[in-house]
Length: 171
Image (cartoon, rainbow, N blue to C red; front, top):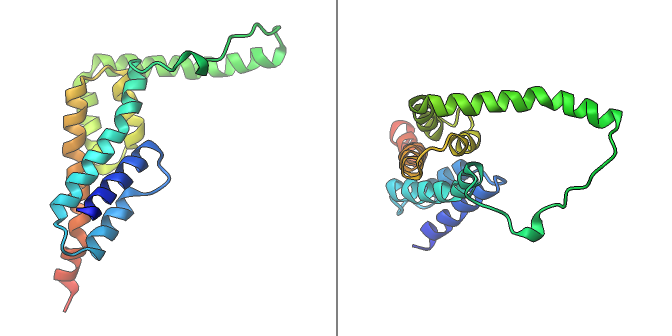
């Protein structure tokens, strides 16, 4: 039970602040703790990962608002040539983001399929797709359901890999 709680904590923290690779941790847990079932490791990892991504999803959706003390007070700065160049450079990027957001809203099924593939394969990057699903206003139940299913498959394959490897190439 302690190992599963540790796995949940690592999965949750790596989803919030991706400094630790949860995939490497899952393989390490499956290799070093043979008494833990691979499905338990996969389920705990999936729940931790998806719960850790929910704040990013809600922030992209606009459901989370920062407290007032964290907002910057807008300052009126005098126009400068440098600021104008920066605004013109980022204009194309802002327009491209608006186009992507609108296409995601128009083609919800593509977004669902891409999110499902990303949650299993990691390509396109799962973190980017979490934000895109929030921008596209995907339903929370669909976000959590697809994410849990995909992440469970990913972590189940990783957690069962050491046992499969030993079965194929072991004594």
